[in-house]
Length: 172
Length: 172
DNA sequence: TATTGTTATACTCTATAACTATA
DNA sequence: TATAGTTATAGAGTATAACAATA
Image: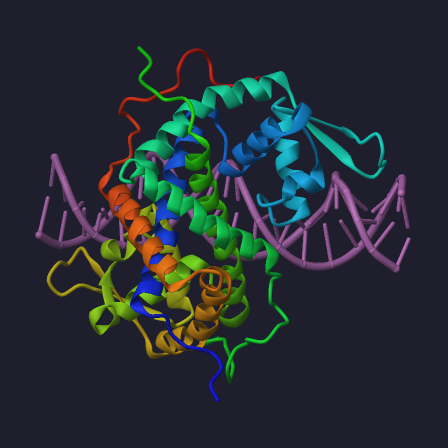
């Protein structure tokens, strides 16, 4: 009658831990480089890079949030920070008066260009170096599927699995 | 004469982005569960779990830090927090008077047991669900190699790649 | 001198709730 | 009413530097 498998086998654990630790190490190294070279946090870099890929360097706030930030106020905070530094500009959207359009400035694009080579260098040296061409393709495929699945899967706060029994607080 | 490949090809970018986004989504979901059920941050959970795997539930502070925390003061902070909640105990090490041994308490182990099923559930539902058995094994292999490589690779702050040319600050 | 760990401090970031304005 | 975004605020976490104690 038990519906939850309470454990993972060794392989599953290995995949999970490897994912967490590899991404953590990579992210830490990348953050270091971005901070050193561009005085940017990773989130800020992601926002700039997202804008850099967008047509006209513009995106609505809501669209910008996508996979990068998990709360609206957090995005507002970062957008303000970037705007103060002159890396982006915010303006009301033309069609929808509620929306704000965030646009990459020349300075923002320049900084992106300054930071990018080193960024790529870190990813190259740390993540890609020990992997074959096939490995990289396989990794992209598997993790791509996992990511797509996670995107589709809603947070299950009120779903099934809660805590089993008693009180959760462990002392005071 | 160019030594830095300034870009990644589509596959490499795909692998990198998929890694970052998948791990970010997974981590966010797991953090939510840990917070809800055990009032634990991910780092705190990692520390408890590391102790749970250690012989006698004990580790020296330095050893505990390993892949989890990137500064000593950060570890001290977390260890204090966990100790205040009665989840771990700290005591001077027997052999080396400088060292502190951190030990999981019964309450700590209990909380770990309370949190673990849901934790596994999230990993199962979010990461493993869309993957075949082979995918998982492959993922563990590839990311395991990447992680091992990163562990061995020292941070290259003073190494080769710095910023290319002019000033990095983009405005003020 | 090098290592282990703590403290003080300052800062970044995130999230929640209340709020404004437009659709 | 629902959506887009901001503000106020509070809390968690992190890192640096100075410090004490042991090896």
